[in-house]
Structure formats: structure tokens, C-alpha cells
Image (tube, rainbow, N blue to C red; front, side):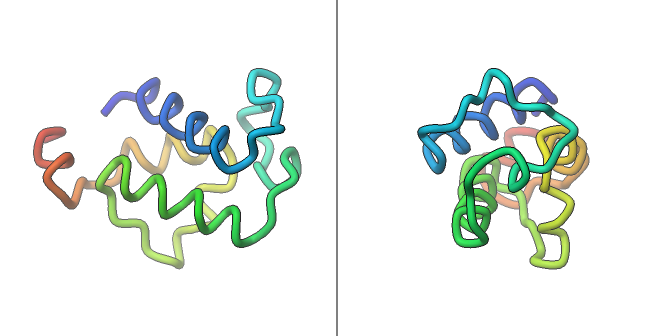
Length: 90
């Protein structure tokens, strides 16, 4: 999974969770919660959708590491895959 793949998937999921968000103007190094009108439940749904889409285990303690687009890309490209889709990534 490339950084561009992770970025594309994260933006798609954000668009589903916050359809009113102006994703093209999203600043990649600023937290989603600062830029988008999402609450903790929206953020949890974002993390769950990332897990399902990328087949990467994301421990609850690591949720803060997914706070911005750049942080998501860094974390998810380095994370080992855990499921069938991940087996294809190896």
C-alpha cells in the first residue's frame, strides 16, 4: 500500500463521514478535528473504516496517531497488515 493509496482511502472515508467537508483544502498536517466538524464518534467511525478498508489493526492507544492526513499516511504505511487484503500487500 503506497502513501497515495492510503491518502486516497482516508479522504474517501472522510468524505463519507463529513460530506460537507472541503477535502481539497484540507491541510495535511493539521488535525481532522480542528479542520472538520467531526466529533469523537465520527473519528471512531473513521478509524473503524480505515481498519476495514486497509485490513490494518489499529490499537485504541494508537488512535491519536491518526489525527491528521500526514499522520494517517505515516502510521498506516508502516503498520503491518492483518487480514486477507493485507496478505496481498506483503
